[in-house]
Image 1 (cartoon, rainbow, N blue to C red):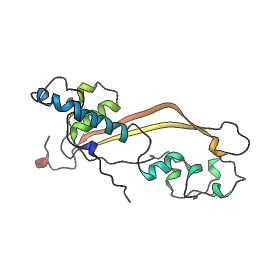
Image 2: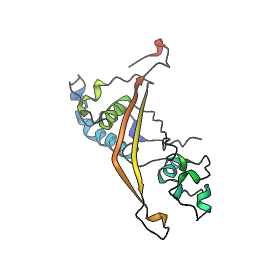
Image 3: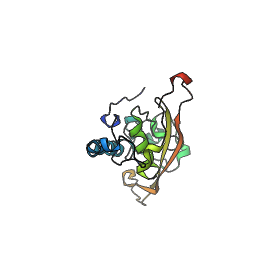
Image 4: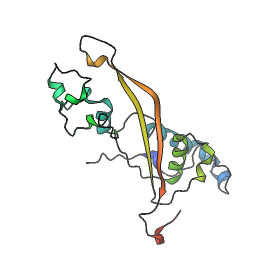
Length: 193
């Protein structure tokens, strides 16, 4: 089952930063850039620079001790030490993804290449004005892995209150670009840029 969402942040428009080197259309798009650029930046904040956006992703992010599905044996057995994960009878609930080192959520974006080129530069902390130097064919596939390394810190509360455990980030997110603009699934006569 897929959680499909429409987003106005993925439609065509010039990113907020003019490309370097400039193109013949750079001057023409400057008036639009101030408006559309805000929209594209907002899309980045909403879709990529935040906590999970799908229901399954939110369950996985919060972990098994905050799972509303009550699927695990640990939630029914108060005598089990909740930091000893190998005693948990696990199901296929998304709350186990972190324990299995699986992605919290997988999101498929379909949108305009200008938006994706800009977002990729921003995610990889590359110069933003270089967005047009990235080549993305129509219908191409790019794969990014955003790893948010968080720990659950036990704050030594002896009353067994698992709500008091604190999530803290070890060193922020690690972004890996696994694939950029792959068009191998398209026959050569359909390749366009």
